[in-house]
Length: 487
Ligand SMILES: *Cc1c(COP(=O)(O)O)cnc(C)c1O
Image (cartoon, rainbow, N blue to C red; front, top):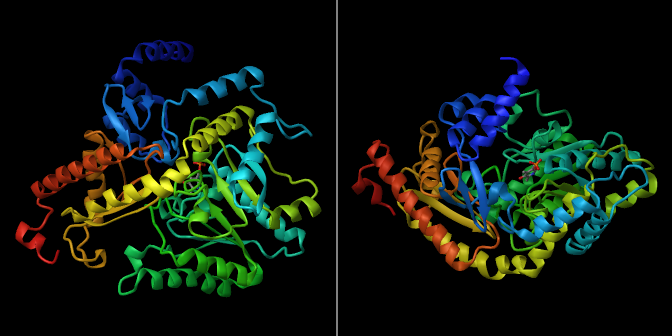
């Protein structure tokens, strides 16, 4: 077919496909390469077509309603269907849809948002650099911290220490900072000057220790790495307060203060990647406040606009900003859409909603503790070895045979893909819960009331029952008498 004919045929089918799932799925398979997806496998069964969102629910093109336990992708903090954000975006688009901030110019929403972010962030932050995404925020941070040391005459001080199983985005630098082995295997990563230490995952590495002891031990790996490289070569340490994509890895309370102490001891910059933990997810504006640490730089994205429009950026602490501004001259870095007025208008309205509805305090004092109580009851399920929450993120571990502690449970063979089996039961029954190996995770919208938390946890339990029945039928569970001993 001639390409013009093909294009007009596609347009026609798109119009019809507003109500035709198959047509959309076929066009999707023919033309749309999805992120982090095996396109061939997806084409064989077709993507689920999402068409509408309201509150904590989304609907697919077949009219099926799903409770969105993942807030889109960790971002829908204020939930779907907020007309006031749509209105703010519409008004800004009519007033000034775009202008750049490169050439001695600025725009009103970007300035107002920068001031607002300074107001709600810890006192060491007085400056903001805007990007289009979290990945670009982390790229920006690499350039900033290296420039910070260069300007002070430390040209060798360029190494950044991160952690295995961290997620810091998908650009070359973001994926390098991240510690996802699957990503590092593709495209020649990591780029030079980035090294990784172990993650503070108590359930994985803490056998025979208290969480407090393990937190100190996991932090000590940073000091070991600094001494191995030479402190005069280490620019910064970066971490998510709670690792999100890695599987909601909640560090012991001792971990972050010890990381802070080590960074301070060697004068190393501390970077908090707040792309998930920021904007109320842990019951504070930023996750580092929850853990009581004082980062020099913070990456943000996702919750800053609740995903309504793409936006990311970096909060730059005084220690770094003072050097960059006083000694730096031109900073040769930036994006066309840095400080995009429409994105900033969406963020301002999103933050106004978070404040008006007191979502941060509600998660800290009310709904967060309530979710904890409810979610942790799932630990008594036959299939669950541990269930834990932190603010509005939560994770549970599927196990083949329970024991008093997860460290003693019998785990499933990873090849069985039990997490994906469980995820399918969740999806098919109207619950969006993500699988990371055998760990099932959620990060629900912050607007949930108690009744919605009840509904969600009941739904998760029902889906765990179906998963258990399914696994039993497949012969993957031990006989009942055997399964219940030791509980
Ligand atoms: C999603 C995420 C990123 C990347 O953000 P993008 O907007 O997808 O580029 C970076 N860090 C963390 C912790 C994230 O969860």
